[in-house]
Length: 440
Image (tube, rainbow, N blue to C red; front, side, top):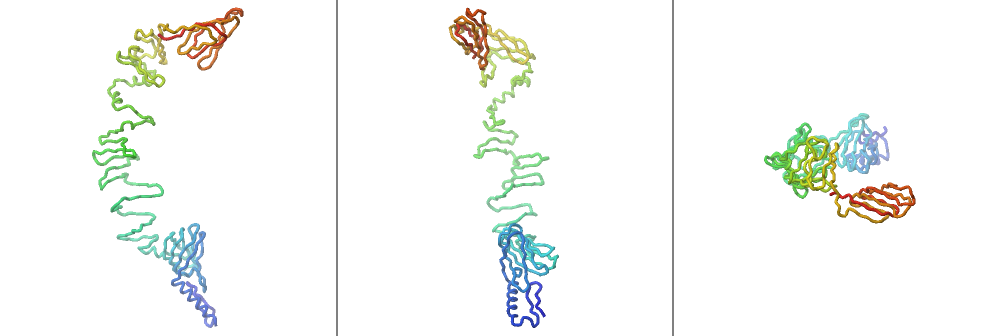
């Protein structure tokens, strides 16, 4: 009779009359197998994502260890297949790797042991349909996945969990501060639509969902919502009476500070101006309401970014009510203005009654003359006989040719023209007389 083997441990059963002279060696191997099956601790090194844990008949093998200490550096979740699939096995597992270790034997259930965790598992040896079961999931004090019911759990060293489901209504901290530290975002989800902030059990602030609008309000009566800078400097506050109070110099629109005081802005609260009258200040020329200046007042105008005042002694009434064009009806006397017109585009045109005489006339001989400060009327003639052209250069650099010849190259050529401010006339040497057009 030949030897046979135990179904689960692979221990050799020597056949009757077999192995004469060698049965002692076989028996010693069997004792080693029994010793490993009962209390053997084996270090199993994992690599990649799969391996086989085999129990070999009559030979010491890794599948015979009672305790499996998993090590190595698997590249991902590692699947360990228990072989053969018809052997009952019981293992104490410690997963010392950084990956999940999943034990399987057949098409039945598998058991996964988390990285750094442990478990007691058994394989039922049911052949192709064999299943692996986690016994520790049935123990209430298991450190692996599973459910348990406890009156009190004390974990002074910390608790590592995947998700927390709370049947009660409070999380209490007896003393100190509570820090919620997450690697991603903190998502507060309140199905009731209210987020309440309390101090010592008294609610002070509430954020409420109102048809997807957000309501922020203090709950304590007669208290304000205050906005501060980091150093505690107050910027603004919403007072209990509904007033939105902005600290002086802390209000800006689109980055531009509003420097008007409340008293200055409140002037508009007592003014009797209409929207149409205010539109005149905005440059709306379609509104033709008249502007009348009292004797003690004046008009403020923007002159290239500088605010200037035209005194009442210089200006009275500009147009009749409702007019978009017309004649200036009144000006102060003695200012050199005799009247003018307002065009349909809103342009005001005034007239001089005379020119100032002091320093307005100049004569001389030169090859060029420039009208500086005021426009000039200039007339002249060449200082030598011949035919000459003169060049008028405008302030922007453009030029024009001035030809005023008498047709005789043996006589002098003369010219006369008006030079705008900044323009000049040049050419062969000429004698001239220039008159500055200075307002009176």
